[in-house]
Amino acid sequence: KKGRAFPFLISVEAVEELRECRATADEWRLGAAATLTHIEETLVGEYPSFAQMLRVFASRQIRSRATLGGNLATASPIGDSAPVLLSLGASVELLSAARGARRVPLEDFFTGYRQTVLAPDEVIAAICIPRATAAHRAAFLKVSRRREMDISIVSGAFRLDLGEGGLEVGGGLGGLRALVLVERLGLGPPRRGVALGGVALGVGGGAGVAEHPGALGLGVATGLLGAAVGLGAPGRRPP
Image (cartoon, rainbow, N blue to C red; front, side, top):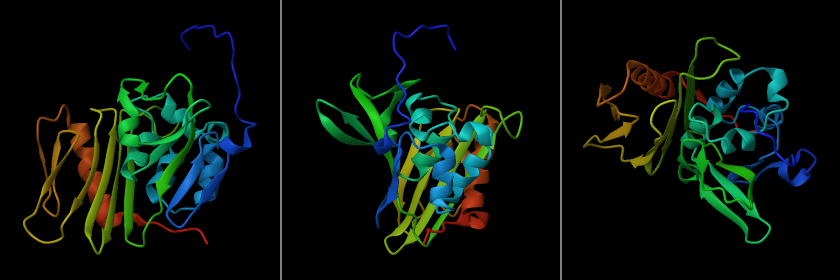
């Protein structure tokens, strides 16, 4: 893309351990070299926001070659997968031949514009996502000049999980300031507010602007919250 010449290019698509996708009772472990098409067919709708993201991610041909690990490793602020995975509480498993494996929450993986905590001797081995609950509601929204085959202007994702311990909210925005929202809230009063990309969201109480750089982010955030609360599709765990 920038005319750089690399002395070596190594393909990892034949490394089966990096392509494997498997589930436990607690999480999905998605191989970093698994294609987006394979992941889509494997998850079969457990995470509605992830499925929504894939529907507007490039084309079917590209999704059949593109990998989830590759999309995250570029650390682009307009990458489509990061907001969804942030909202789902994902983590990445990093692997070094010298130091073994370590797991990093995705909100700690990105350190700046196209910068990550990935060491020179590490690769992304897998992306780990907690299993969806029966009360899981989620939504993804992407704003771009075209519906398909275009980069994001703004994108975002919300997740709501209502359980016995209260309401767990997860969110992520792309194309704005780097931010992740993961906070456990009580169901009763007093109501508490949470900040998302400069937008102040009161749980159960609408939204207001707080030093936001533009109206698009507010529209995305409020639209996502409404979709997740009222219209967001429930997750469906594969048999």
